[in-house]
Image 1 (spheres, rainbow, N blue to C red):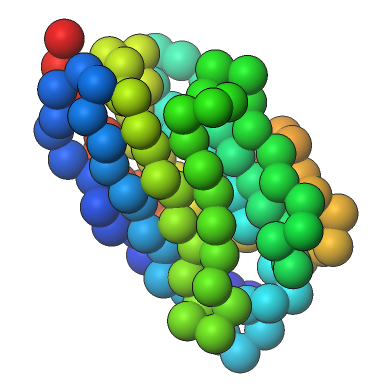
Image 2 (image 1 turned 135 degrees about the horizontal axis):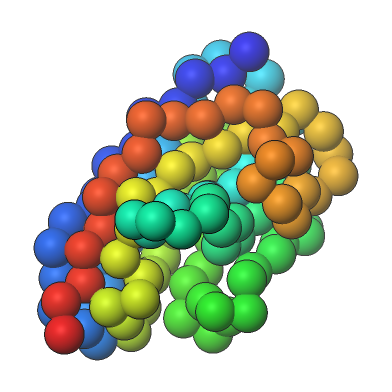
Length: 124
């Protein structure tokens, strides 16, 4: 089992950047596919990015392609989400999620383990 703690959220203006970090526990971090999933008030959870064990494969939602970048450092048990050119519609709680599978998950329901989330608020 893996446990995660997110950090890096905050309040920024439109056009700004933020980098989220997710620190995971456990010695088998490298065997988990990792993802970032967000949930805005009144909306369903939406996976925004995913990354495979080796980082060879990545997935991005259309709404963030070209603006967000997911990366991982297996030596540090950490996954990152670099968010550039933020928009008010990116406002949400961002969750780090893990899946004990080599197959990259592209739906939030495919991830079994979740962090507590970090709030990102983008003002216009």
